[in-house]
Image 1 (cartoon, rainbow, N blue to C red):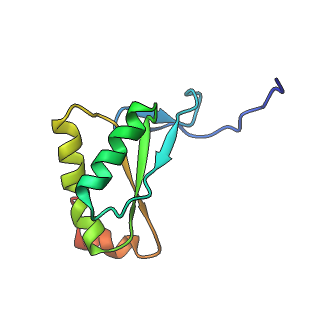
Image 2: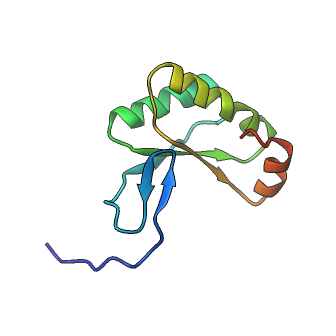
Length: 103
């Protein structure tokens, strides 16, 4: 195995999962569902978490996706999945966050 020197970074806590700093490497993934499809996205996040993903990103690229995020998180928590969900905002993230601050 080739030794790799880690760059110095600041540790960030994302809902109980620490990335960066001296924390161990975290397995993260991203859904490929339409985030507005709550059931499909929840199902895929559960599958990713069951496969070992410690953090899951979802695209938040429009109003419908932004509206869906709180329901996705709610359904995951109600079914016992504490996996942190990170919104992957595109170029309009600042606008969506202003319209949907609960996201």
